[in-house]
Image (tube, rainbow, N blue to C red):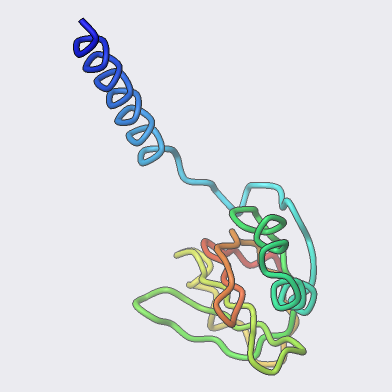
Length: 138
């Protein structure tokens, strides 16, 4: 009898796990352009926060819609996706903004040294702060 209860419990947990995984995999994507920013700040502020205390910055910024303003240091297109680098006071790191398909079409209008605001989802810090699904604000 105990084995049957254990088997039924494991089966129920497995079914719930599969259901949750399915829902997470198929959840609708966030439209960054029409969503309100959770946090608005400068490129210098976000890079300083991550380089000072990465674990605290992860709690504050990860998976949130962030609007960052800064100066364009470089633009490039990699695998048909635009990437804007916003310069910071940090000698080793920048804010890398991976643009959406719509924003990539506007990348040629940007010039090095131009001040821009970009809204995207923060995915973390690896020498650079990474924002994805970015939209140009100005």
